[in-house]
Length: 54
Image (cartoon, rainbow, N blue to C red):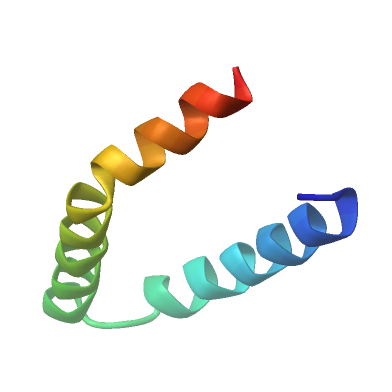
């Protein structure tokens, strides 16, 4: 991943956070729950990739 990719991801994350903050609490909670589920299901893959980076 290069600097440009990181900057793009950071900008997209910032925009998503602003959009998420303006949603009703129940919608935010559902979105956060789905994000957590996605991270949990990708946990081993993320750990493997991180181990290669270290």
